[in-house]
Length: 536
Ligand code: GLN
View 1: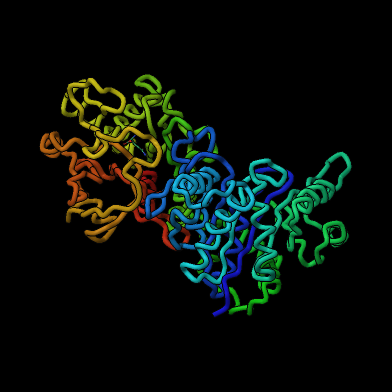
View 2: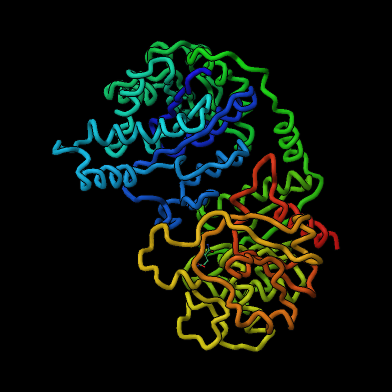
């Protein structure tokens, strides 16, 4: 068995060039050639994980099967590869330092001065190799967050330098950079790339492959120029042109032979020709929709592109599966009230109320749900969205006027949503929610059963509050059924309405499990219901 190959992806010139998508695309191509691959993200911030960061800072927090709160790039990795990631796939500077400081306190360093080199860099290398060693992957692709030149990412680049020295051709560095187009000069410019590679060289790392993010095609002259200035072969200068969809990128990288460059340089066999027929079929369906629906996404962060990333991608998968273009219309929950709701919801074929925390915008979410319930518009409520559906039903159907969640109204006399028992003793905020995959049992003769086609499911969670079982009978008698239950802890995981064509609230997050190969059944079915509604 050949040793694991470590591929590093660094970024230069600017952030947001799409290191995550390039990493995931390369991984997809290698996987399609028959190699086992995993992807890891190293984040240079001091937070232990992004769980305590708000979406303005960090976009969506993605949750893995084993309950790690991680960077949203891990969502891309799973959506592309259809293989679950874990805590080990996301490492932050905070986590690295925490581990080193813990060891120092235990006395493990035997009186040595603890330093960035070698102690921090050793811990970084340990986290990188851990993935390769434990699972015997052919490739571990490690994406280094931030941009070369940032103070924060110095120890990571140093760890790459050391690894390259230690393992030679088992290690490869891809540098993603920007080649801007200057309209006034009508020219693509290579200087920022030259500078960024120089910055990397100053830190002792020569990239093997340079991926150039660009709006216009790179011609041969330009490729040669970058190759000459940056010490790489012209074939190692890869164009990454702006694409219509992030799902086009693996095929664009295939055309550019990125996978072959990587295999050659790491002295690996080529494997079989990439098996991408399913991927291509997905793209074909995505690009040739036969119908269209408009789904309202109600949340308080809708103006942020990345705040509901996994939900948006789940709609892309579900749309392709239904050969339907899903237009997701962002609706700010704070601007919805009883006067604006009808106008805001006009033309929608489905309404999704998003997950969230805290009371901002909560009444708008509840109002949107009332509208969906009363007008029989397909509705999906995720986590806080499900909790709001319970509150709405409590208030407007059961007549419990002050029905609320104790998260927003600790003093309410009708706490229909309440803190989970084992959360009551929790004082620290980081990493202490009910996190990761838990089983759920679905009742037969329910919409949920029709959607999943089975009784036993497992879904990922991220919450502290839950349906208050004291109210369960009252709710069920009035028509809101608990159709999915976690039997071990007796938690309501799915609610649905009897007298409504498609109204589902879920305490878990199906969006974390939707992939290109496996679109999530709840989203697929929700879109189907929206198509049905639109045709009425
Ligand atoms: N704030 C709610 C809770 O903690 C919902 C969380 C969420 O939507 N992820 O239970």
